[in-house]
View 1 (cartoon, helix red, strand yellow):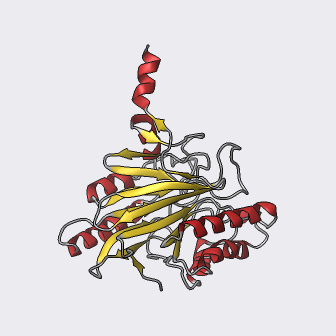
View 2: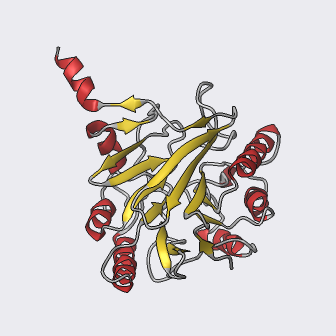
View 3: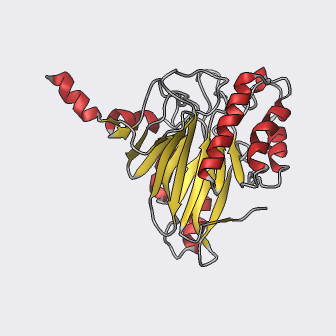
Length: 315
């Protein structure tokens, strides 16, 4: 298994591919793979993180083969990669555990099935090793589920309370090992938290919001746990293909990726692409930018200031 390490210059770069939506071949699948290859060659990341909907299972002729095409593009380049599943990855007859078994079979996969005595498949933490040979940063993966499992609650799934308890235990253990100081951490999941809606409504954000935040109808408290534990400084979701904004709420940057796949809905003025994340060893911050299909690299996204909008409406 690959070991994640900060580079000699103290950086660690992650490419987030989200909503790849591989289906049954054809021009759109080929365009998706070509785009991913261009981004990997340009960015040369230390890790690739797939944040769900790698495949659209119900539309795949062979789901495991289509999954293989997407992740092999990374694995064959000998780049370490990881994955959390989305609602479309196992929306038909393919069990999550079987898809995870497939993910575990690759040479450079860092995915983990995670504990079997709690909700979800693929809850785990990855360590990024620093110059001392000890963990210097953490990357949490959380399975955000599929659809609601409660009959009278419509909509999408959520990160369950036992998963949150697992995160709190992991976080506390790493903090204790680090002399009581929380390690800088990021969290990756597919379906955005309700706080993604809140941050857009209340805080200064950067980027685009072209569709509603399709978050769960109930709030299980993950964000509160992240704030209380004090280690996670940024979260990364997908799911909403026309949103790519980020904003800071209570000290945590809530970030969308940029939808990667061509086999799903989009906008002509919203090119496919990926979000890039760069950590700096020893710092509780990160840089992030978008790399898009048209070849552009976007470091500065448009500003959305809800307070300015409210002032304008009040005039």
